[in-house]
Amino acid sequence: MTNGPKKPPLLRVTNLGLRRLSTSEPMTILSDVSFELGRGEILGIIGESGAGKSTLGNAVLGLLPSEFQRISGMIELDGKSIDSMEADERDTLRGRRISAIFQDHTASLDPLMTVGAQVQETILAADGCVTRREARTRAVELLARVGIPDPQDRYGNYPHQFSGGQRQRAVIAIALAGSPDIIIADEPTSALDATVQKQILKLLRSLVDETGISIILVTHDMGVVSEITDRVLVMRNGQVVEQDRAQLILDRPTNDYTRSLLAAVPRLRISTAMEGVPANNTATVSQEAAKGGNMFLVAADVSKAFSTQGLSRMFGKNRVKFALRDVTIALPPGAITGIVGESGSGKTTIGRIIAGLDTASAGTVTIAGNKFDVSKAGRRNGLLGRVQMIFQDPAVSLNPRMTIGETLRESVRFGADPRLEKGPADVETMMDRLGLPRSFLTRHPHQLSGGQKQRVCIARALLARPQIIVADEPTSALDVSVQAEIVKLLKDTIAEQNITMIFISHDLAVVQQLCSSVYIFKDGRVEDFGPSDFVFSHSPNPYTRALIAARPARFIG
Image 1 (cartoon, rainbow, N blue to C red):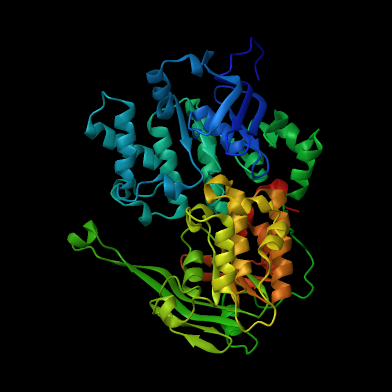
Image 2 (cartoon, rainbow, N blue to C red):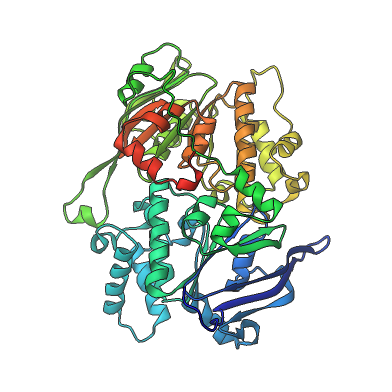
């Protein structure tokens, strides 16, 4: 690092205070928040759900809802107060000088436009002098830059034809399309598996180093913080409790709250002991397990094929793509079994088929000796009601017109098994167990943070008292301290109610803590299988070892 006069910050926030107006009384959301963002710097903002991280990012972007009121402070870009700018100049900032990558990549993309057209549209909006042909060429270059394979061909694909990781890359391309000075990335990797997350983080770091762009990275993932951030801002209850260089925060935190966050990060345990290890640990073990008589749920030889349509079909290129090929998994009663794999490996597809939300092209699902025809939708084959699903995206899975209380009471009323002697769990007690204030029962989903909404979704599934729960990334939106509490709650509840659970996740450490066994999926097949501790410590499978190697080394041990 060279010595010399300190360069003025690109962005400076000074004593920012915000409150939310409500029908009862105003609530303080941010209080005296101050920080600086240098050029070519990545600033990480961490803290628990509801700490004000996303609100701070939206304040910089100028995207706060009308019920938020500024009570103090100033936001300056290049030494000029954004508030003092003319309205046209402020509007020009958003999307051009300051861009955003939002947490929900699905909601960020227009499902009726091709991905390439959305990138091209952003380029045209940012630069009125560029031609449509030039904008298309640059859009293809941006898709290539963020790692989209065959960008010329994928230009004409729609968002639903991309995997989750590829959609997130497309959103990054759109954020870069206006050549901004600052990108505010709100949980850009929370729903991504370890290998794709590592690729995205490497991409963001290289973009900063190559272009000098600055990034504000809002996250609850300490692994992300340790990988790419230069400085870290720790927030709690709308206030900054600590900020410093990333290495100092991670190695020698001075605040007790920061220390508690670091202590709560799950660590992947790699053991050298071989006691109790099965001699054979290949994917064929799952086939042998399915033949056993002590399995509560068996999905046997399940395949799912998609037919490519649209332009490719018009030109005679209609092809069949398999999301699943001859997948067999077997779950013992009252156990939690993990499914791990990269984006597009078929994890969610097998979960949705078992839940009766998707049909299969071939195969069977057997629950407690009863066979279900998975070629039919769940309402017709009888799976709906037996299986509850916790979806990856809580914002989409909650009815925006219903209060939290109405949603949970509906789950109790329609989901509970009438054969149970004991009545369904009390809604308020479940709120207490999940660390949610009972006052939230009168709120609507948009009034909760992402982590709080995910806890509501978990409560909804547990209150229904199903035989099986399929949990698709249920902790991806939760901060580490809440995640530890939720993992304990799930373990206890599964044991108490004898529920069988499929736990789909990209977080290997959480899977190891929660699941007795794990299936590793790759390209729609079972690549590896076995007891969790053995698979993560001793499996010789190259793909399994690659997933482990993608996890930040600081949190292995």
